[in-house]
Image 1 (cartoon, one colour):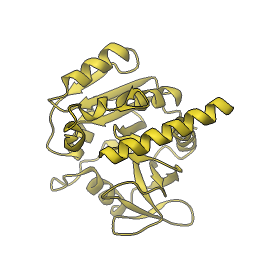
Image 2 (tube, rainbow, N blue to C red):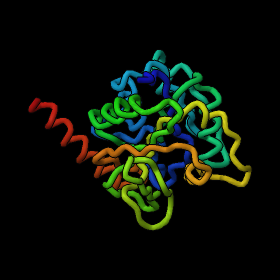
Image 3 (cartoon, rainbow, N blue to C red):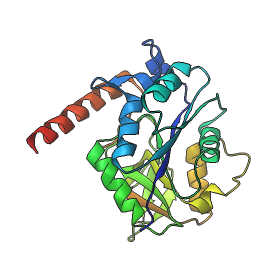
Image 4 (cartoon, one colour):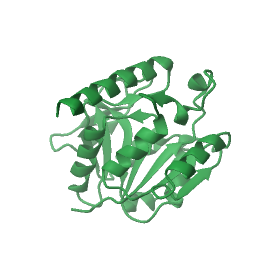
Length: 236
């Protein structure tokens, strides 16, 4: 087993539809806690000890929140506007410790127990394998579909159907971190498609429910999931 002790959070998107409410996406409250706090607490619960975070250039308030509340957990906070999700991904890889890296987008709202179970299962996979969290729960305007073979390896990414959709949570192998993708790629999903077509080993591990928090209705759905999670903990 290769323990995953470092992580990274991509929070550099504009989040324009949620910003209309007057708050940056990473600070949108879910069950009374900012979205970025939920993701960081998930990382900590999974045993990650060091997390790098990237915000866009207009989110100094988000960076200040993380630096004040999560100083020890998130020692590297980058505030920089990037041209694409792939550039944000590359920037955060560059400032993160070497080795396998647990990466999440800030808007991937996932119940804590499911997040921890994903990380534990990912640690059991070969270290040269990049692992994608996928979910059958489609709550995304533009889902990225994944097809798997009988061994759970990703055979195709993209299209209008598949076995599940990507959840915005990944474990990136060091060999993949060292790659130089074609310059014409602009989005993280294009990079994943390229990895698949180039034959890099990708494994898909399923999480029952993950919400891509991008719209007000997604916030409501995440709130419902948070309440369900709290009720389950109370019964335990």
